[in-house]
Length: 415
Ligand SMILES: *Cc1c(COP(=O)(O)O)cnc(C)c1O
Image (cartoon, rainbow, N blue to C red; front, top):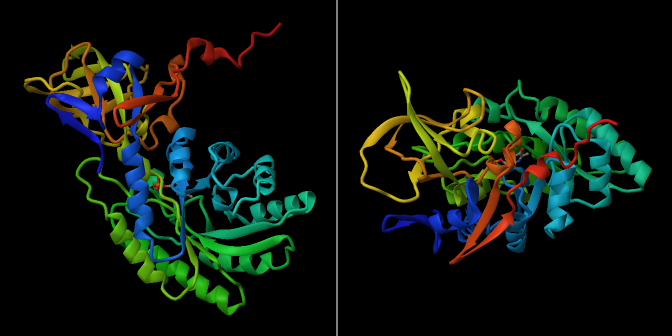
C-alpha cells in the first residue's frame, strides 16, 4: 500500500502533484509519503500486538532524522549499525532503551558512545567483540546488556550480497560456538546476557527461511534456559521483502503469525528490525530526462539521476518500476535508462519497455525509499539530491540539496 497515484494524467504523492514539487525544488530528488510511512509502521507493529515486542526500525534503510522522528513518535525503537546511526536516532528523540546495536565491526569509540547512552543491548558478532565490550564496561564503569547474533545457516533465497545468515557469511557466530560464548560470558562481570539474535538477510520473499531460522533460535533459547540463562529478548532481525516488480512477499500478519507460533511458550519479548518494509514503497526518486539517444544496438534515455543517487540497480541488478510523472499518449520503446555517471554500470533500468520519453520530462523511479538516499554518494562530484516529505497537500524539505561548496567543505589544499 502506498500513496503514489495518478489523478488524471498526473502523478501525485498524497495530495501533492509531483510535478509541482519538481518545479520548486529542482531534480533529482527523493520524495516520501508520510501517510505511507505511518501506515507501514502501524500495520507491522499491530501484527505483533498480541505478544510483548519492540519494533526497532533498521536505521540504515533510510536514516533521515525526519523519518526517524516519524517512527519514533509511533513508538519505534532503532536497530543501529554505527555510532553515526546512534547519533541520528538519539538526535531524532528515539529512546535509548529501545535501541539495539548490530554490526560486525564496532569500534571502541562507538562502543563507548553506546555504553554511555545506555542502549538496550549489543548484538555481539564475535568473540573478540565481546572481550572488547567487557573491557570498555570496566573502563567506563558501565554494564552492557548483550545478545549473541547467531548464524543459523539458513538460505534466505535472496541476492547473495544481502544474504547474511549462511555459514560462509561474515555475520554472527556459528550456533555451536555461540553456546560456548554464552557460557564464557558468565565470567565477564559487567556483561549481562539478555538475548539471542539473528538476522538472515534482506528482501526475503518467502516465509520458509524465517521459520527455519526461528526454529534454530528457539532450540538455543531452550538450551540456554536449561543452563540457567534468563533470556529476555529474542531479536529476529529484519529482512521481510517488498514488491518491487512481480514478487509477492508474505504480508506482515502472515510473517507475525508464523513467528509468534514458533516462539510460543518461550516467554521472551520479541525484537523485530524491519527496514526496507517500512520505507521502501514509501519513497520514489524523481528525475528529469536530459537526452534520448539511439545507439547501434540499444536506445538510451539519459536522466539526471545516476548510480550515485540510487545504486541498487547497479550493484544488485534490482528492478524499479519507472513511470512518467505526466502520462502522455506514447508508443512503447525498449530502452536503457541511464545516468550521467562515467561508468557503464550506471543504469536505473536496462532493456525496459516503457512509454517513449522526451527531453525535459519527469520520471518517477518507484520503490526507492529504502537503501536509496542512504546508499547515495558524491561520486563524480555530484551533490547529493534533496529529500522531500509530503504530508497531505504540503511538502517539507527534510534534507536540502547539497551545493558545490558542500562537496569541498572538508577539503584543504596543502600549504
Ligand atoms: C539491514 C539489517 C536489517 C534490516 O533489513 P531489511 O531487509 O531492510 O528489513 C535488520 N537488522 C540487521 C542486523 C540488519 O543488518
